[in-house]
Amino acid sequence: MNMGPILAEIQRLQQGLQSMTIETSEGEGAVKIVMNGSQEVLNVSFDPAALSPDNIAALQIMTASAFNKAITASKDMIKTEVVKITGGLNLPNIPGLL
Image (cartoon, rainbow, N blue to C red):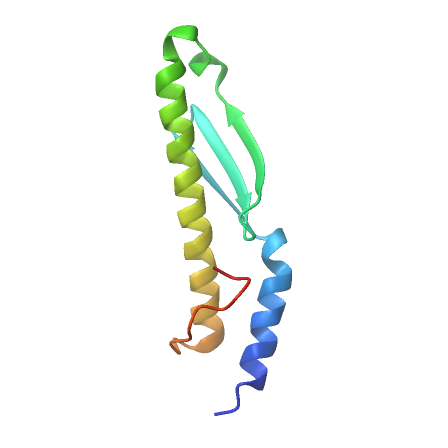
């Protein structure tokens, strides 16, 4: 099997990760996280209604959960793209992707 074309596509994917984005939210939009495919956080936003001194503990939990969901969604997005490239071929972890 000629892996050259697959490796070239993987390299293109690695280069394009920064332009691929996902958005997750928690608490019915109280916390929103936008992250790129390189798992860099691009934006964190809070609904002003959630910014209450009485709501700090809940906001902390929602923020952590939103970050975790964003990381998982980013990894899933990458896996989906790798499957498209490889046609489902099971490759070991590729450095720089996951």
